[in-house]
Structures are given as C-alpha cells and as structure tokens.
Image: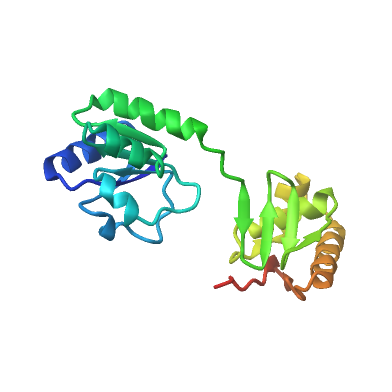
Length: 213
C-alpha cells in the first residue's frame, strides 16, 4: 500500500482528501500543518496544501512532493523548483490521483535491502556488506544469511532452515547446515563481525546483531 503524508490547512479539504485517498487504496496520514508531520515517517509521497510549507517541511531524501496551491503562475514556478508537481486550486480529484500515480512512476524503485546497521544485505544486487565491507558468499551461504537476517531476533530451528533454504522434506543426519553456518560466521568475522551467526544448541541458529544508532 502506498503511504502518503498530507499537510492541508483547510479542514474540509483535509477531511475530503484523507477519506477519498484512503478509499482509493492509499495509506494516508493527514495533518493541518507540516510542523505536525512525524519526522520518523517514511512515506512514498508528500502532499502539501500550502506552497510556503516547502520552506519548512523536512522531506525524506528521494521522497516526491506534490503541492496544491493557488492558480498563481509565479507561485507555481517558485514551487516547482523544489517539488515534483504542482496542482492549482480548485482541482479535479481524479486529476490529483492521476498526478500522484504519474509522479510515483517516475520515482526510482526502492532497493530491496535488509539493513541491520552493521550488516546490510542488498537483495537487488545480491550483495552483502559487513561494516561497509563486501562479504562474498556462495549461493546457499547467501540464502541462509538472507533467511536469518529477514527476522534477526528469531531463533530458526534446524528443520526450518533445512526446509526453507535447502528444500529438504525429511531431516536425516547431515552437516550441511552446520558447515554453511560456520563458513558464514568465519567470513563475517574476517569482515569485523565476530560471532555474528549464533548456534543455539539443541534448536538452530540466529543472528547476534546490534542496530546502529
């Protein structure tokens, strides 16, 4: 679901947009002013009902902005120097939705990252970084690390890992999991992350991670 942040000073317009956009499948957080926008939010797009708010609004890097402003050509030109689109009031709601979709199509797709701070797995590039250093993993080593990193606080049982990474249907005696985990642990240690893959005796494996602040 596409996440939108809306800052609209006119109450009736804010109420209308919040409900209409939600009914069209957007996840909308609506506020009166940009001062109320949550700083920790990570939206896909920001809608601003006040062109002057561009000077006060802190938008996450790469997040597109659409301004809803007066039909003033000078204000429009100034706003377009800092935003991705400008729609003059009064506007047709369907045009606003079309412009939202158009802006989102132009936005570069977000990379598929698992970011644990000290360990980053870029699944688009199939790249692993430990403290900023590349770690080269073989196929099943990489698949095992992705599985563990996808839920880093969880202890995965041996059976779960053999099933999900190797596709084993029966769990006969094998050292496959142990040997792969050992190699990942050694490679991460060489990159500066000692003891990162933890063997939980009698259960399975998990990651020992400390999120970067």
